[in-house]
Length: 132
Image (cartoon, rainbow, N blue to C red; front, side, top):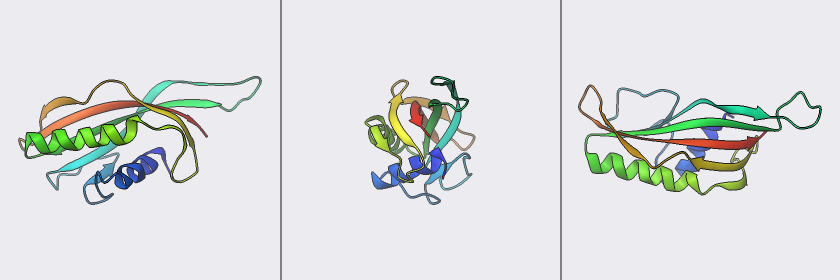
C-alpha cells in the first residue's frame, strides 16, 4: 500500500469522502464535479543513520486539492482534509507499512482559481515525516 492509499484511508475514516467515488490519488478525473485528490511530489532528501545504506526517515510531500461547482463546497472539503491530516503525529499508517512521525501542513489551504469547466479549486500542501 502506498502513502497515498494510507492518506485516502485516513480521509475516508474522517468522513471526508470515499475512495474511487469522490476521493482520488494521483490523477484528477473529469467527473464528478466535487472531488478531492491527493498527489505525492518530491520533498526534502531522506535522513540516514550511522552506516546504513537505507534511509531512516523520509520526507515526501503531498498536495491535497479539491474541486467543486460551488466555492463553499470546495473550501469546506479542503478544510476537512486539512483538519484530518494535520494532527497526525507518531502514528502507524492504516496499512501498517509505514510509521508517520508527523504530517505537517506547509501552509493554510488556499484558493487556486477555477478549472476549464469553471469549477472552484482549493489546494493545501503537506510534508510527511515517515519511517519505513
